[in-house]
Amino acid sequence: MVSELNTQWLDAPQQVIWRNFLAANAVISERMDTALRPFGLDLGEYEILVVLSESPKMQLRMSDLAVAVHQSRSRLTHTVTRMEQKDLLLRKACADDRRGVIAVLTAKGFRLLEEAAPTHVGSVREAFVDLVAPNDFQAVGRAVAAVVEDAGLSSWSPSVPA
Image (cartoon, rainbow, N blue to C red; front, side, top):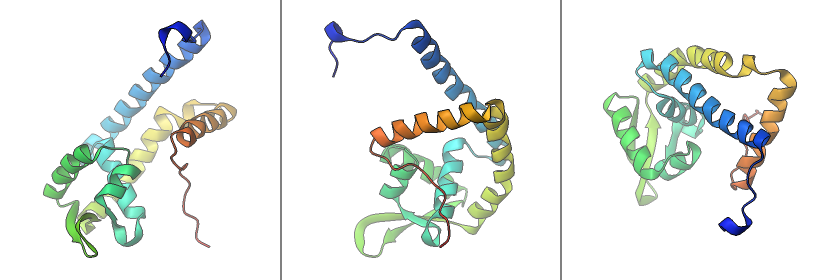
């Protein structure tokens, strides 16, 4: 923890970049939530569907799912409960650990993901990707990868078949 005596304050350009980053993050999230609303989803729910769809047998322990979608276990439990009520996923007991719970993507959840995906990708492009010059986009990629690495998380990369 940094004490106030040796705080290295942001200079004016750094302050501008930081505040623009925060504002951009809010704008991007709102635009993606808005795009997903007609599907009855928010961005957090969509991310859960994606992670489960990419998992072996379209299922994952709740604790691992919480890490993968960057949500607290408590928040994930509430979100999963809502999604389970809509039959997008179900929970089942873990066979090898009685305390463990596994979230499983349902056929209805997978169909909704397939239906919403083109709209979501379009909103990602409109809200971010297509607005940023290619060189700047690569720089943003390096910047966020450094933050992810510093947090001890592994950078996301698509699974490529061998």
